Amino acid sequence: MTSVFIAIIIFITIVSLAGILSDHINKQSKLKLEVLKQEIKLEKIRNEGHIAETEKLRLEIEQTRQQLTLDHPKEFKLE
Image (tube, rainbow, N blue to C red; front, top):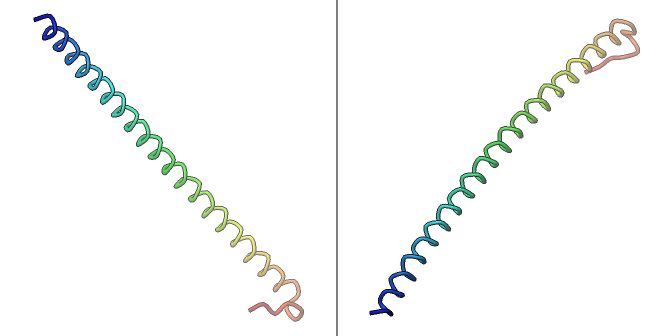
């Protein structure tokens, strides 16, 4: 009878530990997923910044080309 009681206590302890471990793993997985979502969001923001900077530089180059063409039309024939 004592061995059955000990076996039941061990079984309950193992089930409880398994539940705690499973809960911990689920929480870690959710945190990792949230971190990945934030990293993707940050990468999108960075990409938008690069696109905006590229467009700004393209416009500056175009303005410089136009100004050079107006200032020196014969010397700077840009295609």
